[in-house]
Length: 153
Image 1 (cartoon, rainbow, N blue to C red):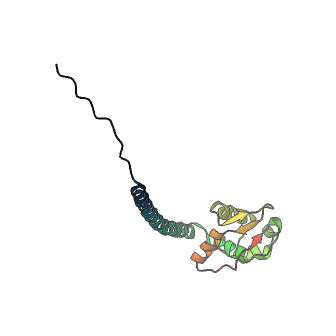
Image 2 (tube, rainbow, N blue to C red; image 1 turned 90 degrees about the vertical axis):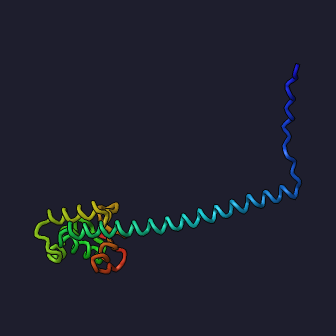
Image 3 (cartoon, helix red, strand yellow; image 1 turned 30 degrees about the vertical axis):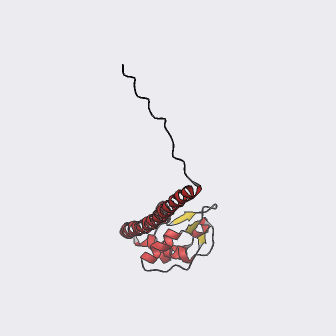
């Protein structure tokens, strides 16, 4: 009769303190390299995203330049220089209406709706308009420099 051979007990390697410190140092080095590589990849991704955002904004602004009628662009330009006034004063301001060439107040409402829909301006708590950063960038895209923040309240 053959007896089954006894399996050798499972013995774990015992490391010295020096070996453990060396292993810990190696793991920390690999982790630091991985972290540095991940940070570099993140920076590249951010740069690529910025390029894509710039390209998408270029195409969006090209579309808006084609889509928005000249009076809407004039309205945005005038809004960039506007002083604070209530929405009703703004809508009844005949000088401004004549300046941008609007023949009817309903057209002014359509212009207002269009720039709000495309986030070129925002409505404040008084139903007034404030030119957004996007609106300023669009004006720059068109070749106009807006004077900074402005609002028609």
